[in-house]
Image (cartoon, rainbow, N blue to C red; front, side):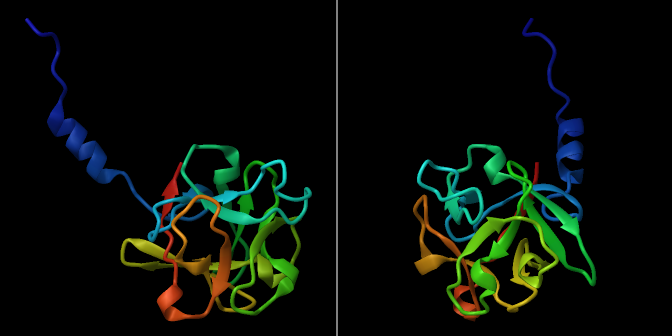
Length: 165
């Protein structure tokens, strides 16, 4: 006698009905298609002051600095708010330039803190409302600590899957 057996038919049905990806308001991790690392707020000792901490990619460890509350604003845009701090993802210095870094910053009504989230296959394109540029990993980085920036170059689009927590 080997004990009770799992109900595989029930397990398969349950797994096939779980929604993956962005479904609206909620807490998510944001994973890079390119590197398979997640968006991470640099909370290291030398990561910066309480305002303007940079966004980077890092191996997933489930920390609150890797979780983001996505909240609708208006006209189909969203704020992406770091769970650990309650601060919004923001384009540094309100820049509209390619390569401008992303950071966390206190909530404001600015369009540099609003994002369009659009499905592209199984992944998502996250576009800054103000600049109309997409989230991207600097220099196609695959390492921990590679910075997150905005980019207009189609070849550099970083399509980010959003996975519910």
